[in-house]
Length: 335
Image (cartoon, rainbow, N blue to C red; front, side):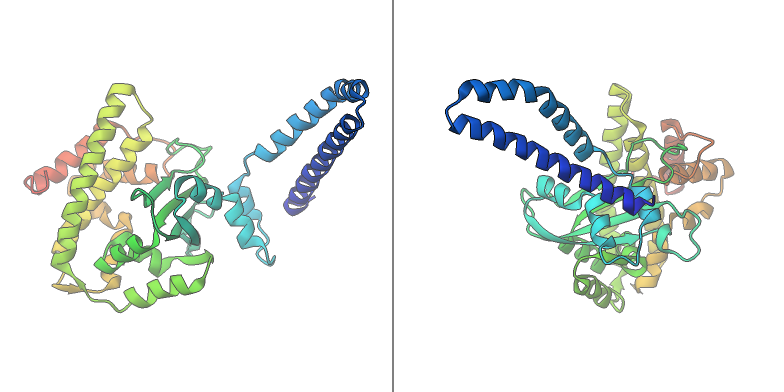
């Protein structure tokens, strides 16, 4: 039995249970309407265990988490419904309804190693949801770190990462020359939603001329926020022994932004999309470190966040060593 048949059988079972529950309720309501309370409550007492078991089974079936990776790897792309099945499995609409009620529509984009022809991590999936609408209380961004928060473990190397972003804020960042946004546009592919919105992003950014000095100012503002987030995560980890994931992730963004900024400062006054897109490939910065020991620490940080380093674990001390090296090298310019 293939995965699609299994999923259909699961849906059929849920439907059957729903019908049975409705039928039993109808019997009870009918007897009560006839005024025979003894018969009604007698039937209710008899059927109560049955209803309880069916209700428990229904709840379990409806709440079983889908294995996203199995769905993606086994999905039938010849099917007319595979894109909708994927968005349903990622629970995008539910997440938007509960966290971003001001947004009524979206486009789903896949990017990263899974869309490259020379993909070395065939089960490593990155998605971004660009939300269309108006934010409430200025909530415009959320990152789902995957199925679990573990870093670089054999159980989660294939987990899915999902980012939710406001469409216009994403567009403004891309137009300013931010590497991540331009890399998503340049290398990503639309999975679900109106393709015109994605094409508009391509049309706007592919021929735009970015101002290096403006981008530098944006990066310095960005780095201030990322440093504050790193310090917050570090302090919370030391105080409450929280999951290291947040320390690793915040340290990764803070350190990588420092390295990206240094590279941008060496660019010409006017730059184009291909110049900033290459900066989104963080492995590009592996050779930025003269000290081999510090270089290995940065490689460990990157590969750990990407869940591709199974033999070693990154520590808070490792991140501090990298930061100290960058700050000394840059003479505290962004300290």
